[in-house]
Structures are given as C-alpha cells and as structure tokens.
Length: 110
Image 1 (tube, rainbow, N blue to C red):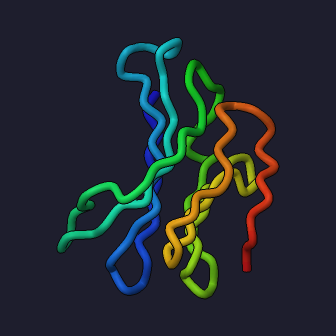
Image 2 (cartoon, rainbow, N blue to C red; image 1 turned 45 degrees about the vertical axis):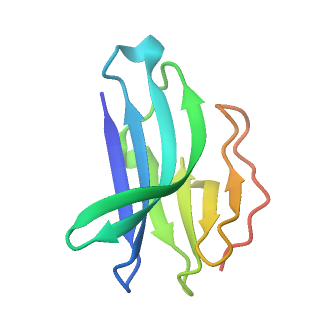
C-alpha cells in the first residue's frame, strides 16, 4: 500500500509532503518527508528531504498527518500522533527522521 499526505502553506509557495512507496514490494518500501515548492496548482521541485524509513512498515493513511505550525514557519510530519520530522521553511533546517528508530526528535513546535 502506498501512502501520501501533504499540506500546502497558506501563501501557496511551499508544501510538506509525505510519501511511503511500496511499488517494488513491502520489503523494498521507502518513506520520505519532502519540502517542495508549489508551482501553480502542482508540486514543484523538491527543496529538501528527510529519510523516514526503509522496508515494510505497518502504517495506514490514518497514522500520518502533515501540518504547518500556527506561524507557518515549520511544517511537520506526525506519525502515530508524534512529531517525527520537520522542516524550518525560513532557515532550511531539517529535524528528525530516524530511519525507523524512535521518533522523538527535538523539534520546536508552536
């Protein structure tokens, strides 16, 4: 099963995008969180990425949410309700990931 979730900033310039891809089978699956530019109505070039996990993973679309913080400076990936990764859209800093390890990243969030 492939899983995709995204959130576009109110300005319409950037989006946080999560993708879990099992195209080559569950054992070869990959999960990434991307910061992408928005070009018109489409996702543009990827600005940055964070590797989340490789291999089979027991998640569903309901387990994943991409959200911007209230100031729209950070876009975060929440997995099982926990902030697992984030991008700072102002500085370009990346936080979290963990390649399937404990998702307790030290990330500022408001």
